[in-house]
Image 1 (spheres, rainbow, N blue to C red):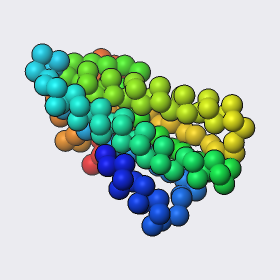
Image 2: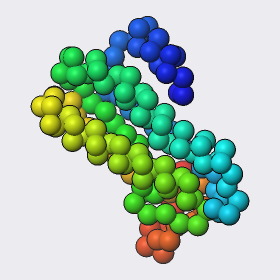
Image 3: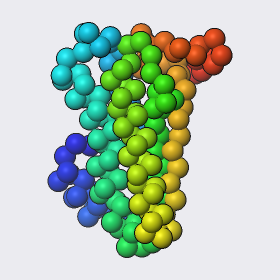
Length: 145
């Protein structure tokens, strides 16, 4: 969700969840030389900013209640990049940094809010067509079918 007003109204219509799971992925699968500014913006928007906005929307109520869990689904790409996924990896690197900062703030503030980050590997779906891993010899793709 990119519309902050829509998120604010969502919070008014539904109760704050006990467990907030943030998962989104957009993969352009293009080499850097072929990426346009709109590709990079859409990747960062879907893969990082949408998570940040949703967390920022629900976190104040979780703080008020002093409970909850935030689950971030990132990617193995938040640790390692490869051909045709520089923008995707950069957005997931940013998401991992966001999550780490959030976790440290919650800890500093002594809140009873748990954070979990998950780093799935490449899954053989159409989402990752055109993406290869530098580690395929050691970690083959996971197949869904």
